[in-house]
Image: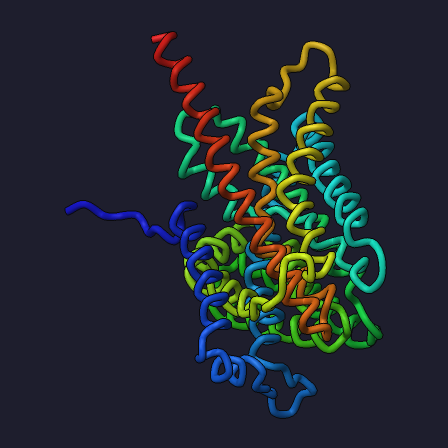
Amino acid sequence: MRITANPLRGQQFPAALLLAAAALGLLFANLPAHDGIAVVLDGHIAIPGTALDLSVHEWVADGLLAIFFLVVAIELRHELTHGELNSLSKAVQPAIAAGGGVIVPILIYLLVAGGGATHVGWPIPTATDIAFALGVLAMFGKGLPSAVRVFLLALAILDDIIGIVFIAVLFAHNVDWLMFGLSVAAVVAFWALSHWLHATGHPGIAVAMGVVGLIAWGCMALSGIHATIAGVLLGLVMAPVPAERVRHALEPTVNGLILPVFAFVAAFVVIPQVSPLQLSPAFWGILIALPVGKVIGITLFGWLSLQIRPRGTAPALVLPDLIAAGVLGGIGFTVSLLLANLAFAGEGPLRDEAILGVLGGSLIALVLSGAFVSMRARHYRTLAKSAA
């Protein structure tokens, strides 16, 4: 009997699921069912005995997404210690390219939407969605050298680090340092417990880790710093062996439930009944900066990194493959949607147009990357046939 691998651990199916969830969110937001769903998303759920009282929308963005960031942080730590970013020679080209993939989109956004209240949206087009980009690469990139995937993975991971810094630094408001300190103390206790679990394997320790992790998240949520940062810290400090087990256990849930639910909720926006010229500069800034800024920034800075690499060192990618990675980098989606919600929190119409800009810009990048990656893959398959 043939055992079929879980598609939720792959790359193509989760990316398609994420896109479908976002499309459904946008569809239902513009149907008569809108009001009923909006009431549910705006409804509050409080935790008795605590100050935690969040809307369903906030529970998804602050709670469920913290689990996603926990898994991301575990992957970050692995890549930084044992993976594709564990040495300067491996990290230099993707690091420089990632810098360009952040700087150029910011400049384009500020050029288009830097005036007035929309200027605060500049972090939105800086993110690359790892799951989506790798899903497109897996779908259309058969025959591409493995170096393309490795480079894209390193690039997206560095993008995630920058996005996490933005979330932690730019969107912290009226910080309660006592709550933050308690969260950090819980993270330290979590670290100690994870090493204890690694040494003994006692299941009771795993339960204690879960409780301490929830305390770390709750205190972070009450501190004024975005609660997803707790997930990042917990993932970074966890002992490697338990961390890998947690990542493996959570991966199907993150891909099959958490990210699609977040995509549905984040994309639940009403399309403005206005002409394109009446749309906010934030919409146009994001729409342009994601697909255009990313490909220009990643390609240009990646090319510059080729010129400064040590003599005799082979480039991580040649120029046409850099362009392919740059187009894939324009698929912002998950982190960009979160940044849009944070940048324009409390400004409903402006936030909705920013989210539409993320969806539109990511869709443009998705279509372009599918075409360009297919072209490059066809080129390499032809070379392989010629060499055979």
